[in-house]
Every structure is written in structure tokens, then in C-alpha cells.
Length: 250
Image: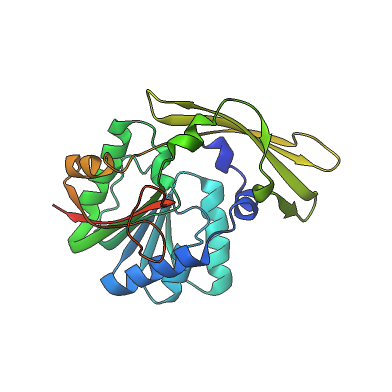
């Protein structure tokens, strides 16, 4: 788990401002399911707070206390009630079931081993109400992109953001891909115009390939109901950016 990378909630929100399409998709899924919603790896609540604003009873679980504190402030500012829980998605017991469980924005991929992935999915299975659904999104791995992870530090211009105190922040990333474990291990460097490497943070993230994901779900007592390749619900193809999955109890 790359806890250091997520220690600063404000920087995270500037680095990953979120997708309006993703929020709209998950709000639509919550409307379709009805009832209670749980998000694992909820971060600062960018998806869960809009769902809660629609009147859904919502719970957000995250490992980072800083992320949860930021989420609580954002929810309070919008006048929205959400139950925030600090916990580990690899294994949890919230004492209730949910009609919709969400694992968004590659959060599942912070679990680096098959054992951790199945443990998380089994916990989800135990928390699903009858007729409940798990909806998750993970990136669709590109072998061409993984081959470029050669450990060389490179500027990621698309990730640059403005910090109100530091000004423009540039992001460099150096990463390598371990095919045996399917894990990309990287170091992220944040620099301003006047100071290099203000923050240096490691990040590890796993790949889950399209033929692997249904097997992991089966081991956890879940099954794939629908799978899309983008937020418009287009079919999953080789070049699709996402694996957007709707799952049910087996």
C-alpha cells in the first residue's frame, strides 16, 4: 500500500482533479441500485459526496486519516452526511450490508498480491445485500506502455498543477515494471519553478489483465455481470482505457 503517496490530501486533489464522467457514471449506478452505498478507497470523497447529495446513505472507507479528514470537510461544506471509516480494504467488517459497493479510480490496484485482492473482494461479498452490486474501475493494461517503464525519470506535463502557495508544480516519474508480480514501481518527483524535488514519493500499482479479473472475482464468490471500456458504456476492446465492471454475488 503506497500510504506515503496519499499523505497530503490537498496535493492529491490538485494532481487528480477527478472526472465528471466518472462521477456521473457512479451516481447513475447508485440511482439504479438504490439503498446504501459503500466506497472503498474513497479518498477525499470526490465520487461519494455527489452520491450522498442525491439522498443516498453513504459510507466511505479509506486507509488514510488525512484523506478522510479532507473528505469530511468537503462533505460538511456541502451539507452532506457521510459515514467516514478509517480501515483497510484488504479485510474489513462494518457490521452492515450495502446495495452498492464502489471501488473507483484504480483503488483496487493498490493491492499488490492475489491474496490481498481476493481478500478485499471476499470482504465485499460479505457486505453485499441481496441483489447488491459491486462496481469498480481499473485501467486496461497496455503492454506497449508497460514496456516503456524503464526506470528513466521523465516529465509528465499532463500532470502539472498549480499550488496556491508554491505556484506551478511539475511532476516527473521514474518507474519500472516487474512482469513476474505485475507491479509497476515508481518514484514521483514534484518540483516548482524555484525548487527541485520539493516532494519525492514512491508509488506501487498492480496490473489486473482482462482475463484475470473474472477469475479473481470467482475466487471471492462474485461474478462479472457487465464490463465496459469507457464511461459511455462502450464495449471493452484491446485499446479501451478502462475495465469498468459491474459484479454480483455468485
